[in-house]
Amino acid sequence: MFFHTGTPKSTSRRLIPVVMCLMLPSLPGCSIRGYALRSAADAVSSAGGGYGEEEDPELVRYAAAFALETMEQLHKEVPDHPWLPLSLAAGFTQYSYAFVQQDADRAEDKDFKRSQELLARARRLYLRGRNHALDGLERRHKGLRQALLAPKKEGRAEALMRAGKDDVPLLYWAGASWALAISTAKDHMDLVGDLPVVEEIIARALALDEAWDSGAIHEFYVSYDAARSKEAGGGPERARQHLDRAMALSGGHRVGPLLSYAEGVLVPQQKKAEFTQMLNKVLEADVYADDDAWRKERLANVINQDRAHWLLTRLGDLFAE
Image (tube, rainbow, N blue to C red; front, side, top):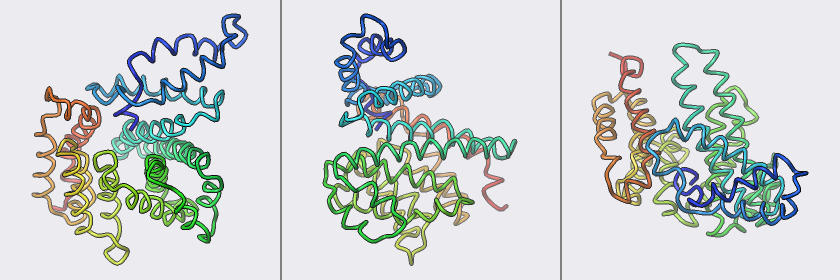
């Protein structure tokens, strides 16, 4: 994940000459431009380090925007790089959710027009991330992108069967970004109509590696099944099962699944006491603990705790007295 893996600590030093080459392609020192670009692409798309341990979301808001712009420029220069599409898919999706959609949600009560503008921007960024994920899948399995974007279902399941365990990260970010875009597009029926595609993509990822990224796929299903009826394969009981599995796979070090369940299940059920209890559990988590397991999840947990604080100020709006 973008916030969890990011770039090695040495990346910033390696990026300086590359960014200059991108901005000033005629610079004499850029005769080794191709090698520098590929080296930088390796660096920014490699695992380790990253923003996951950062505790100040505002610092990441601006740093991530620069990183994404840089990666997209690198991707244009090195279109065949094997890992940039994954980094871009994860990056755009998480940036949009953490910083754009959160702002849209908070603006809704005060400035509805501004909220809608932010949601439209979030949707564009989600689809940008989805497209990078589809590009990555297409490089691995020719024809898969076309099959997933085709208006008819025929051939889609067969195409997805070609994806293997190594494709799970790209499948996850393709499905997650697409689902989030749909969640902002209730008036865009052409996009809402893509929901069955998302279901197939995420189901394939779950079947291939249900424990991937400490239960991230199960965390996705907490929200997704909360919004689906029992007849459609979802419902509160299924969401609870995914919550329990997500918490087990993360060792309890992620508070996101608890927040998703509280919003997706307990608010519709109007269970105010349980909602408040679960959000307090989110807030009680020691996300600043000097422990590797907590440290690598710090940024996501801090953002989720901040949302929990905000939701607790809106109990009168969320629950009937």
